Length: 150
Image (tube, rainbow, N blue to C red; front, side, top):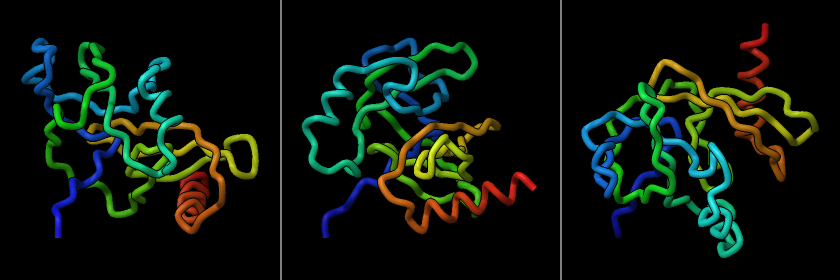
């Protein structure tokens, strides 16, 4: 059976080996490629794939201390640093990016949510999304969000 690469979770800490050497030897945070603004190559990805759940291969990496970032970094240029996600984390794919989701909050309609996700650092991340259907995973995240609000 061929070996598969595990998904790279948004919020992971990584080191970088690509051409921008000033970013080498730093602990960097992985984010969706287009999180700061539009990324045309990533926008094109959405047009050429017929599988909306296919894993993304490009990311934005950011230095949490300096704020410096590099956009459209290939997965092969990143080495994931070991991290244990909390037990209540739900593996969740949103538009090709994997998240260790913690809970959801209402997002404006019955299928829209703000998904709060764990990071390898002390901060929680969040992203807005619109679900095609409310799956058991979405219901679990909704329930975890209601528990946090009490």
